[in-house]
Length: 233
Length: 233
DNA sequence: GATTTTTTTGGAACGTGATATAAAAATTGA
DNA sequence: TCAATTTTTATATCACGTTCCAAAAAAATC
View 1 (cartoon, rainbow over the protein chains, first blue to last red):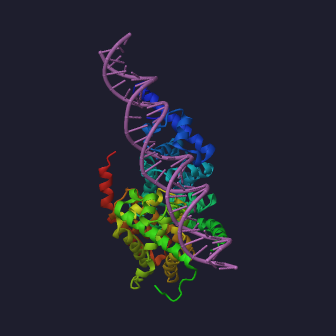
View 2: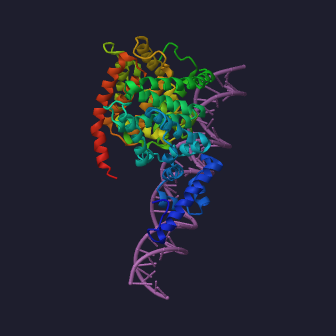
View 3: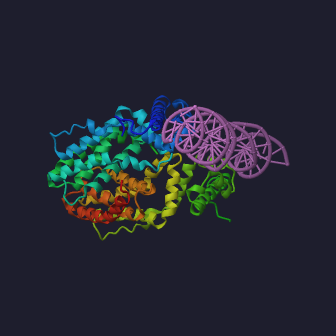
């Protein structure tokens, strides 16, 4: 229902979609130009060439608009080749690294976006998590690992996925709050993923995940030392 | 009123502390009576019997006040007996359960408090995490476990603690956002802790943490089923 | 007691997200 | 083409967190 758009419903809906598109576009531009500070609903409406009330009619709230911006950007599964050469557990780590890399490529933008989202109606963050496609992708990875005997069969992959996501979001929040730097994003996520996966792993994957976790831990160390050094209280 | 002389700094500071106390008290009362909706700075100032500007002079922001409310409440280490009967890893789980139980005992209050905190200047969440006493308590638990050979010596306990805290906060956020119910708080935190600890554990603790994780997973299952059933999209 | 310094006070103001209202415009159906 | 329906627009408004300011009050200093 997004790309070909064979104009299913009449012209009214089309114009509505066009306005929606303009608003999302304007939001993206404004964030990019002025950061989250300049992204007010009034500025947004002006930039999109609509009235102040329209974004509310079309999206409901500012948070919903920012969410739409976020979802408009990412075509995740596409870019993930699969890395079939490595073990299924490493594949999970690679996927996590790819997800992080999105943020690394445009940190200012994402930081402003997330910061602005958190500062407003945050209730619909759930759509971020409860995205069926995303969910299916990750559970697919985990199920594959379980199927090949790398994860314990007693472990429920859906619950495990949720737990991995907790780590992801927490590290991101940490970054957005300025408590860690961009360079700690990859190892921070990787460490948590590796450790949790090791907790769910069979004997087969235990050593591998430990190695990964320790490697990430080593990457994390310098930043951690610098932080605690620069805050001497 | 004739204390010998514990008033280290003059009367000015004392009056300031008194005002601070009144503001924190008023905030607690207002949350309890009206939820986070009724907790406006104007209402708070009126309730505390001070001017609107005073809370800003004394705390800086609404978020800082709510943080002060939170810290005013908890005397955590005290109530934790230690549970020396059980294994060090179980001790960590028990401590987590105790932390969760604080929220279980007064869910409406804490939910309003956190919800209000998140909706305002959220940058100083770091103080929540960066509480030295708290940090020392948890690292103490982990170091003890490592010392007795339950955790791998290569694992840095400070990093591990941060990761456990990520789980804790994420589950809490999930609850505050209404995505999980109160009954999932304990098993949700327990599951994440057990899994992560298993990931950091030596052979000695591996089986134990798996048992715990699976037990929590079983507790989690019914709520999860009910949720996905009631949201049929 | 008089002076100086610090802090609170009352109140106005700003920009924010969000809502409500009536009028205007655009789309639909006949 | 005309009437009915839906949506946008413009504007006013609300409550909110926050900041600013001159004046008053209070404590510390002399």
